[in-house]
Length: 515
Image (cartoon, rainbow, N blue to C red; front, side, top):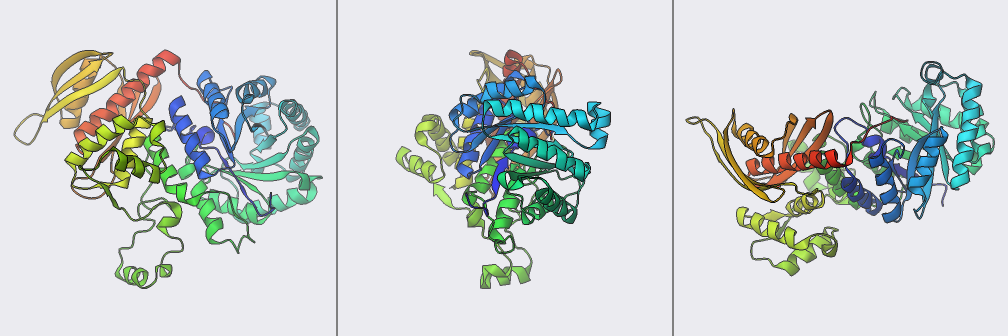
């Protein structure tokens, strides 16, 4: 591999999922992992196997089924963590164990209750055990940027001696500054013996809004792996944004002395959209690369410049990240062959999805809308891919509301195949719908968040609704899409209830934190 190649280590499924409200179930993780493979990431950190049976199963299934990227599992330095990680990874084609321990004074003293020499022993023992299982072992010194530099040199030397092939330098709490971080990477590369035989990696958090800047500064100093997430999701303020790093290197290749990634940039926008639909959190309009305003021009001077030459105000094109101009695709007279062909063009294999269910939903949408766009098709497919077992199923809904009446919702549902119907009053139409659904399902969940987003522009645009529900300390996200926002709201609520039902049957996920 060229020394100019920067590996993209995607931790959306591990660190990203640890962000409040971003948890994913097994099916959602697998769908996203397959998209990350299409995106061209080099490493997928699929989870933290010791954290829960659910996380273990996700890592195991992704290792078995996803081909292309290296599949990685996170483990603390304990023997149990490392053994559990390997148990999850052992059937994978290309696998990596990623083990870590804290090295800053505050973490060693107040969290680990260990002295520096004891931590050094743990580093050697953990890496040696991991290397006994697989040849690809990554070691991270948690809170490296608040650690003593000379002590870090000793730690990384010990990791290399024990068999580590990648040395990760995490800015765990988003504390460092770009120049400072660049100097640290240079110092480590100069003082860690045999550093030319390993790959230096960086894992930056965005507490001060500098995760991308710090990662890029590290690349300039010789780091050749960046740990990041789609949309920059992650604990607290988030992680380094994958799309921003990839496009910064692509756009400013000469500044980075020819460094580039293997990212298929035209898959960036679809990856961003898929994640947003899974976790129910849309990216801000002003988000770099994937935000709705990233390629929008309202000011007259800007519009004139772009019309004259796009390079006047666009340093990259929307097409380069897979976000072409919204285009008309299919209509109510289109048949199965036309829809199947359009699905292939959008990157979906009609044989690997429930095509007949998608076609039925497409026909319903085409009857309701004057025009059907690519984004509408993508929303239908994603909605179908993310469905969980339908213990609760929406059949019909009718709502009466306005300034002269009390909002009333009549809802017909199937509960495990049994037809049920009720009508409820509410403070508003959505409240009435949700009260009716709650009465039918006899559930006690609490609505924490309700979010609406238009998929396309226009009066007949599909509405995309995301809700967060909590029951007995378990939080889930539900999604629904429809041209009728009340139907979309009902779909989202029922989707979340089905997730809660599934969680009650299989147990909940817990988090042990990480780097």
